[in-house]
Length: 129
Length: 348
Image 1 (spheres, rainbow over the protein chains, first blue to last red):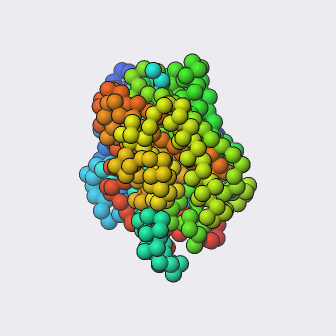
Image 2 (tube, rainbow over the protein chains, first blue to last red; image 1 turned 90 degrees about the horizontal axis):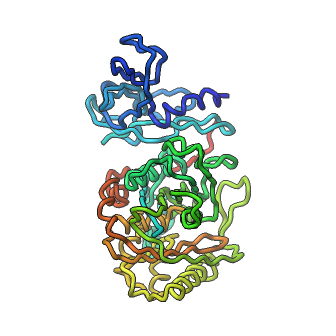
Image 3 (tube, one colour; image 1 turned 135 degrees about the horizontal axis):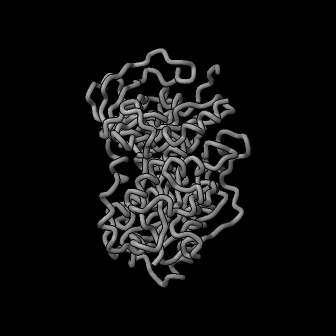
């Protein structure tokens, strides 16, 4: 059962809420308790940009069970326009057309199902723009 | 003045052509194109459902309304493909868009008119002064059984409308609903695909309900078809809306912009709402819009809108329906389509 963990992560997965250090401005995503740069514990909640570019990526051709029907698919490290970096699946694309530097936009998609009886788990994925 | 203050639409990128489906079942695609006027339809990606479509459409509506999401006091999603049997789709949507938690939400179901139900209740709550803004959405990833006539039409997409009193882009002048117990189409609990009564879905269901709702709406408003720049009717296929519009006295030109089903299919609860979104994308201040939905079972909701000067400031703030309909299409073969729509039995 992944419900409690899934529920805790909703602000990040649904709304891209990050922690911005009030002392040095470093953005942490997901939010941290202590700033990795200046060790401050003083954060404000900010919403990340939904656009960015692919820094690097891999093509998954043999996926884990829950994703095996979606292969081949791309998982990329994306740098958003505000500098934050995150890992996301790149959806709705020809995997052979994805390149480093390609501009992407984050959209709201279903990430996985908890079998036939469990939760539908939602979050962000990237599409090429 | 009460009406729409922001609207948005969304369609998936994937498509399947009518001839691809017809080839699979040994049918004549020419008959489908001529008879039903259906050329291709949208198909949801494996990671899309009514909730994700509603979120993307509502995101576009918020971009146009330019309001604080916290001011939205009610959210209703109409669909016959809610991902959960028990858990309202809007619970996910409000958290995705920063609405609530002080908000009233509900899921509606009424075959293809659940979207206009959501719009009507959202409008009524604002009119009653219960909430400042209310969001009504129609979205579906509709089901058509393999080999059934519905397989050529059942598609995916949706539209969202924020109702309010300030900076209204389309005032709602009149509404009228017409409902009866007409068993033309249904889906029993736990059944995967709906059943329909074939040609019975035409005259006693679709045409009777739309015609009655439309005529009452015209009487109530003391308007005639010529008073409108645009008209949109529920689009179960390409043919029916053109026929019912003609019978009511509307011209092809009046129905042209909202008539998108030949290339989109029937997005069920999102059908006439996406047609309305396409109209609002190009509407001019002063335009009058006539809209009547239809949901099997059966009922119709009718609306008369009057477009205001505010429309020109919001049309370009989010993607338009034709952007989704005409651009970046990815065509599927029948095998890919069957996999996407989970029509293939696999071991878990």
